[in-house]
Length: 231
Ligand code: AMP
Image (tube, rainbow, N blue to C red; front, side, top):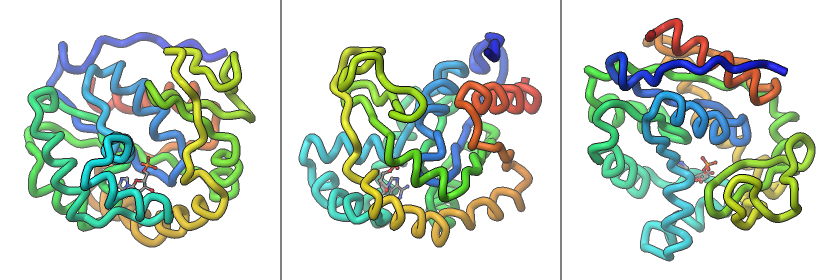
Protein backbone atom coordinates (compact mmCIF):
# COMPACT_ATOMS: atom_id res chain seq x y z
CA UNK A 1 0.00 0.00 0.00
CA UNK A 2 1.26 3.47 -0.77
CA UNK A 3 1.43 5.85 2.17
CA UNK A 4 0.43 9.38 1.26
CA UNK A 5 2.36 11.92 3.28
CA UNK A 6 0.28 14.85 4.41
CA UNK A 7 1.49 18.30 3.38
CA UNK A 8 0.52 21.74 4.55
CA UNK A 9 -2.19 23.38 2.47
CA UNK A 10 -0.84 25.75 -0.16
CA UNK A 11 -3.14 28.56 0.80
CA UNK A 12 -1.83 28.93 4.32
CA UNK A 13 1.85 28.88 3.39
CA UNK A 14 2.18 30.06 -0.19
CA UNK A 15 0.61 32.09 -2.90
CA UNK A 16 -2.55 30.53 -4.24
CA UNK A 17 -2.64 28.17 -7.18
CA UNK A 18 -5.15 27.41 -9.92
CA UNK A 19 -5.28 23.80 -11.10
CA UNK A 20 -6.91 22.43 -14.23
CA UNK A 21 -7.52 18.69 -14.51
CA UNK A 22 -7.48 17.66 -18.15
CA UNK A 23 -8.21 14.21 -19.54
CA UNK A 24 -10.81 12.08 -21.31
CA UNK A 25 -14.19 11.37 -19.69
CA UNK A 26 -13.69 8.78 -16.97
CA UNK A 27 -9.94 9.39 -16.64
CA UNK A 28 -10.34 9.95 -12.89
CA UNK A 29 -10.54 13.76 -12.92
CA UNK A 30 -13.44 13.89 -10.46
CA UNK A 31 -11.87 11.47 -7.99
CA UNK A 32 -8.50 13.23 -8.04
CA UNK A 33 -10.11 16.67 -7.98
CA UNK A 34 -11.91 15.95 -4.72
CA UNK A 35 -8.71 14.86 -2.97
CA UNK A 36 -6.54 17.66 -4.38
CA UNK A 37 -9.11 20.36 -3.56
CA UNK A 38 -9.21 19.08 0.01
CA UNK A 39 -5.42 18.87 0.24
CA UNK A 40 -4.83 22.41 -1.04
CA UNK A 41 -8.01 23.89 0.44
CA UNK A 42 -9.25 25.32 -2.83
CA UNK A 43 -12.78 24.97 -4.25
CA UNK A 44 -13.42 22.08 -6.64
CA UNK A 45 -15.35 23.47 -9.61
CA UNK A 46 -16.75 20.78 -11.88
CA UNK A 47 -18.66 22.09 -14.89
CA UNK A 48 -20.37 18.67 -15.21
CA UNK A 49 -21.53 18.84 -11.57
CA UNK A 50 -22.80 22.41 -12.09
CA UNK A 51 -24.82 21.22 -15.08
CA UNK A 52 -26.17 18.20 -13.16
CA UNK A 53 -27.26 20.57 -10.37
CA UNK A 54 -29.05 22.78 -12.92
CA UNK A 55 -30.68 19.67 -14.45
CA UNK A 56 -31.97 18.44 -11.10
CA UNK A 57 -33.43 21.90 -10.38
CA UNK A 58 -34.82 22.02 -13.93
CA UNK A 59 -33.47 25.53 -14.56
CA UNK A 60 -33.33 26.96 -18.10
CA UNK A 61 -29.61 26.11 -18.29
CA UNK A 62 -30.36 22.61 -16.97
CA UNK A 63 -33.11 21.93 -19.49
CA UNK A 64 -30.94 23.13 -22.37
CA UNK A 65 -27.81 21.31 -21.18
CA UNK A 66 -29.67 18.01 -20.79
CA UNK A 67 -30.19 17.65 -24.57
CA UNK A 68 -26.46 17.90 -25.22
CA UNK A 69 -25.26 15.91 -22.21
CA UNK A 70 -27.56 12.99 -23.02
CA UNK A 71 -26.26 12.97 -26.59
CA UNK A 72 -22.64 12.91 -25.41
CA UNK A 73 -22.01 16.34 -26.96
CA UNK A 74 -20.55 19.51 -25.47
CA UNK A 75 -23.00 22.05 -24.13
CA UNK A 76 -22.69 25.25 -26.24
CA UNK A 77 -20.37 27.92 -24.87
CA UNK A 78 -23.19 30.42 -24.28
CA UNK A 79 -24.42 28.18 -21.42
CA UNK A 80 -21.00 27.14 -20.15
CA UNK A 81 -19.09 30.40 -19.95
CA UNK A 82 -21.46 32.51 -17.83
CA UNK A 83 -22.09 29.63 -15.43
CA UNK A 84 -18.35 29.03 -15.01
CA UNK A 85 -17.24 32.64 -14.77
CA UNK A 86 -20.02 33.43 -12.27
CA UNK A 87 -18.69 30.62 -10.10
CA UNK A 88 -15.09 31.85 -10.44
CA UNK A 89 -16.20 35.29 -9.25
CA UNK A 90 -17.19 33.90 -5.83
CA UNK A 91 -14.89 35.05 -3.02
CA UNK A 92 -13.76 31.49 -2.24
CA UNK A 93 -11.88 31.47 -5.59
CA UNK A 94 -9.79 34.53 -4.77
CA UNK A 95 -6.90 32.35 -3.59
CA UNK A 96 -7.12 29.60 -6.16
CA UNK A 97 -9.44 26.88 -7.44
CA UNK A 98 -9.42 23.53 -9.15
CA UNK A 99 -11.22 23.23 -12.48
CA UNK A 100 -12.55 19.80 -13.46
CA UNK A 101 -14.12 19.55 -16.93
CA UNK A 102 -13.40 23.15 -17.92
CA UNK A 103 -11.94 24.26 -20.28
CA UNK A 104 -12.95 21.65 -22.83
CA UNK A 105 -12.11 23.58 -26.00
CA UNK A 106 -9.38 26.01 -27.04
CA UNK A 107 -12.05 28.75 -27.23
CA UNK A 108 -12.95 28.09 -23.58
CA UNK A 109 -9.26 28.12 -22.61
CA UNK A 110 -8.81 31.46 -24.34
CA UNK A 111 -11.86 32.88 -22.56
CA UNK A 112 -10.43 31.68 -19.25
CA UNK A 113 -7.07 33.28 -20.05
CA UNK A 114 -8.84 36.59 -20.65
CA UNK A 115 -10.76 36.45 -17.36
CA UNK A 116 -8.53 34.84 -14.78
CA UNK A 117 -6.34 36.60 -12.24
CA UNK A 118 -2.86 36.11 -13.70
CA UNK A 119 -1.27 36.64 -10.29
CA UNK A 120 -2.48 33.13 -9.45
CA UNK A 121 -0.17 30.61 -11.16
CA UNK A 122 -1.89 28.01 -13.30
CA UNK A 123 -0.90 24.33 -13.54
CA UNK A 124 -2.58 21.93 -15.94
CA UNK A 125 -2.60 18.29 -14.83
CA UNK A 126 -3.20 15.98 -17.77
CA UNK A 127 -4.35 12.42 -17.03
CA UNK A 128 -3.57 10.15 -19.97
CA UNK A 129 -5.76 7.02 -20.23
CA UNK A 130 -6.23 4.79 -23.34
CA UNK A 131 -9.70 4.71 -24.90
CA UNK A 132 -10.19 0.98 -24.25
CA UNK A 133 -9.67 1.56 -20.52
CA UNK A 134 -12.12 4.48 -20.56
CA UNK A 135 -14.84 2.33 -22.13
CA UNK A 136 -14.31 -0.42 -19.53
CA UNK A 137 -14.28 2.05 -16.63
CA UNK A 138 -17.50 3.72 -17.78
CA UNK A 139 -19.24 0.32 -17.80
CA UNK A 140 -18.58 -0.06 -14.07
CA UNK A 141 -18.75 3.55 -12.89
CA UNK A 142 -21.25 4.53 -10.18
CA UNK A 143 -21.60 7.94 -8.56
CA UNK A 144 -23.19 9.15 -5.32
CA UNK A 145 -26.10 11.49 -6.03
CA UNK A 146 -25.45 13.36 -2.82
CA UNK A 147 -21.67 13.86 -2.44
CA UNK A 148 -20.38 12.91 -5.91
CA UNK A 149 -18.11 10.13 -4.57
CA UNK A 150 -17.12 7.88 -7.50
CA UNK A 151 -17.13 4.06 -7.30
CA UNK A 152 -16.33 1.35 -9.80
CA UNK A 153 -17.85 -2.12 -9.81
CA UNK A 154 -14.55 -3.54 -11.11
CA UNK A 155 -12.16 -1.86 -8.70
CA UNK A 156 -13.84 0.02 -5.87
CA UNK A 157 -17.42 -1.10 -5.17
CA UNK A 158 -19.38 0.51 -2.36
CA UNK A 159 -19.59 -1.68 0.77
CA UNK A 160 -23.40 -1.84 0.53
CA UNK A 161 -24.89 -1.99 -2.98
CA UNK A 162 -26.52 1.31 -3.93
CA UNK A 163 -25.39 3.16 -0.77
CA UNK A 164 -22.50 5.62 -0.53
CA UNK A 165 -19.83 4.55 2.01
CA UNK A 166 -19.04 8.15 2.77
CA UNK A 167 -22.41 9.87 3.22
CA UNK A 168 -25.08 7.14 2.93
CA UNK A 169 -26.45 8.84 -0.22
CA UNK A 170 -27.99 7.02 -3.16
CA UNK A 171 -25.53 5.67 -5.73
CA UNK A 172 -26.52 5.73 -9.39
CA UNK A 173 -25.16 5.16 -12.86
CA UNK A 174 -24.80 8.37 -14.88
CA UNK A 175 -27.05 8.03 -17.97
CA UNK A 176 -24.18 9.41 -20.11
CA UNK A 177 -21.99 6.45 -19.06
CA UNK A 178 -24.05 4.28 -21.42
CA UNK A 179 -21.62 2.60 -23.90
CA UNK A 180 -22.81 4.44 -27.03
CA UNK A 181 -22.73 7.81 -25.32
CA UNK A 182 -19.26 7.14 -23.94
CA UNK A 183 -17.99 6.45 -27.48
CA UNK A 184 -19.50 9.75 -28.61
CA UNK A 185 -17.94 11.59 -25.63
CA UNK A 186 -14.55 10.10 -26.53
CA UNK A 187 -14.91 11.22 -30.12
CA UNK A 188 -15.78 14.74 -28.95
CA UNK A 189 -12.84 14.64 -26.54
CA UNK A 190 -10.35 13.73 -29.28
CA UNK A 191 -11.70 16.32 -31.66
CA UNK A 192 -12.34 19.31 -29.41
CA UNK A 193 -10.61 18.84 -26.05
CA UNK A 194 -7.33 17.06 -26.81
CA UNK A 195 -5.92 20.12 -28.70
CA UNK A 196 -5.66 21.67 -25.22
CA UNK A 197 -2.73 19.32 -24.51
CA UNK A 198 -0.65 21.14 -27.12
CA UNK A 199 -2.12 24.53 -26.19
CA UNK A 200 -0.95 24.23 -22.56
CA UNK A 201 2.29 22.40 -23.45
CA UNK A 202 3.21 25.43 -25.58
CA UNK A 203 2.67 27.62 -22.52
CA UNK A 204 4.99 25.36 -20.48
CA UNK A 205 2.38 24.71 -17.77
CA UNK A 206 1.20 21.17 -18.58
CA UNK A 207 2.25 18.20 -16.44
CA UNK A 208 1.42 14.77 -17.84
CA UNK A 209 0.50 11.71 -15.74
CA UNK A 210 -0.28 8.08 -16.47
CA UNK A 211 -3.94 7.92 -15.39
CA UNK A 212 -4.10 4.18 -16.00
CA UNK A 213 -2.82 3.32 -12.54
CA UNK A 214 -4.30 2.79 -9.13
CA UNK A 215 -6.05 5.97 -7.98
CA UNK A 216 -3.81 6.38 -4.87
CA UNK A 217 -0.68 6.15 -7.06
CA UNK A 218 -2.00 8.81 -9.43
CA UNK A 219 -2.91 11.05 -6.49
CA UNK A 220 0.55 10.68 -4.95
CA UNK A 221 2.22 11.57 -8.27
CA UNK A 222 -0.03 14.59 -8.81
CA UNK A 223 0.62 15.91 -5.33
CA UNK A 224 4.37 15.33 -5.56
CA UNK A 225 4.59 17.26 -8.84
CA UNK A 226 2.49 20.16 -7.58
CA UNK A 227 4.53 20.37 -4.38
CA UNK A 228 7.85 20.18 -6.25
CA UNK A 229 6.81 22.97 -8.55
CA UNK A 230 5.11 25.27 -6.08
CA UNK A 231 6.08 24.52 -2.46
P1 AMP B 1 -18.39 15.68 -16.97
O1 AMP B 1 -19.09 15.43 -15.68
O2 AMP B 1 -17.22 16.60 -16.83
O3 AMP B 1 -18.03 14.40 -17.71
O4 AMP B 1 -19.42 16.46 -17.91
C1 AMP B 1 -20.65 15.85 -18.29
C2 AMP B 1 -21.17 16.54 -19.54
O5 AMP B 1 -21.42 17.94 -19.27
C3 AMP B 1 -20.22 16.56 -20.71
O6 AMP B 1 -20.25 15.35 -21.47
C4 AMP B 1 -20.74 17.75 -21.52
O7 AMP B 1 -21.93 17.42 -22.20
C5 AMP B 1 -21.12 18.74 -20.41
N1 AMP B 1 -19.99 19.61 -20.08
C6 AMP B 1 -19.26 19.62 -18.94
N2 AMP B 1 -18.31 20.56 -18.98
C7 AMP B 1 -18.43 21.17 -20.18
C8 AMP B 1 -17.71 22.21 -20.84
N3 AMP B 1 -16.65 22.81 -20.26
N4 AMP B 1 -18.11 22.58 -22.09
C9 AMP B 1 -19.17 21.99 -22.68
N5 AMP B 1 -19.88 20.99 -22.12
C10 AMP B 1 -19.51 20.57 -20.89
